[in-house]
Length: 212
Image 1 (cartoon, rainbow, N blue to C red):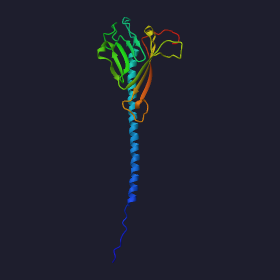
Image 2 (image 1 turned 180 degrees about the horizontal axis):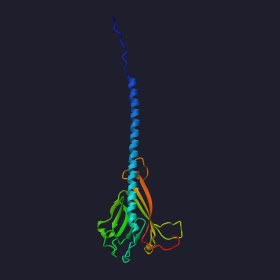
Image 3 (image 1 turned 30 degrees about the horizontal axis):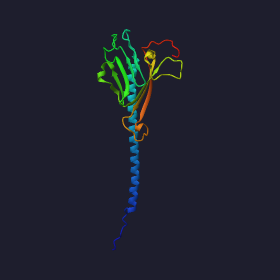
Image 4 (image 1 turned 90 degrees about the vertical axis):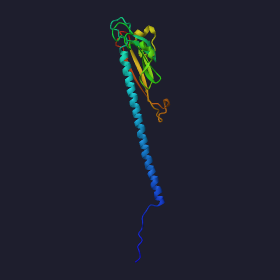
């Protein structure tokens, strides 16, 4: 009796090569999706970090600037000391003693340098400016004065003789991502987020002045 030879089905070399090629395409597509998701997550984290830093920086500055000129006894001569585009200095009689400098942070300066929003208590100037919020790329002050010209809502610098006329301060704070994004071509690869806030000076005596 002759043995019957059965067909033994298998894969040819060409079929294996085709399967490998298809598998490589599928794996490449999956990897591309994962990379996109990873990049999207990183961008989301960067935006979240910048929003938090901007919000914190504006809140800290706004709370202090609103108190600029606080002088419950009328003897401390508290007010705006310096009003420049990149530096603002002001005094606050926080403890109501009638004297500036006998309590912490009664003589305050703000600026943004070395990538951070920094605050300094001038009375404690030996310690230098201390960082309040990191990864701040730019801080700009613009000062609102009584004016008849609506085209000039604020000015970047106020001379010493007009400091008492400042009614509000417009803050522009730009946060920078802590890491470069290779897909972001601008700003040397760093993404940024900018916010603007206007802070009313509560302790400035408002009068019926034109344009205000």
